Amino acid sequence: MGLLSLLAAVFGGFFFYEKHRQKKEKEETLPSAQEFLRVEDIRYNTICLGDGEYRAAIECGSINYFLLSMNEQYAIEQSFSRYIAGLTRNVQFQIQTRQVDMRWAITQIRGNSQKQNNAVLQGYADNLAKFLEDWSAQRSTLIRKNYIVVSSKNEKPEEAYGELNRLAQTTIDALSRMGVKCKVLNTQELLDVLYVSQNKERASYAPGPSKAEELGYMSLLVEGNNQSR
View 1 (cartoon, rainbow, N blue to C red):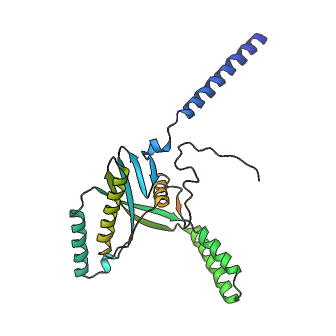
View 2: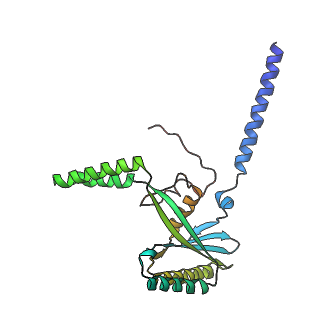
């Protein structure tokens, strides 16, 4: 019986050692997020995909098309047709729907309420914060973000950046004539867009610095430390 127990302990220890070794080797050979997502780097307001491919994104506002007159609708259609016909590179249209995180607004309202000397304004702020809390508890608040992605393929990064800037400015000028406000996304905003596209269920919108990089978005394997407070 003692011999059997000893053999079981030896084989059991070897089994767990082998499983641990295989798991460790698998983690060490795990590819980075850049390889998995085909994103080599994000810099200078540009997504670098490798192999000389670059992308820039433009955030676009919206207009209420159906409130315009027939002549205004026709003018917008003609302007958009000219923009599409004049494109020399492929563009991609993307729409993202995000859930709004209302906690930042509630915290800001409560903080400003404490600074008020006017009891009426303070009561109004408290009621507004309570209303937002009840609203967010009962339903989801969603916003829609519209983007146009322009592309460039060039082995020289400086020339690619210049081409993307020209394409982006052409797009902004064309859409501005239709009454659509646009802006080129900076590096941090590009990181946010990619983070949301890969984390649709848990990504939310709130003003302020992005948390995507802090959360380790560009690393496929993220480890955390459990620290007691």
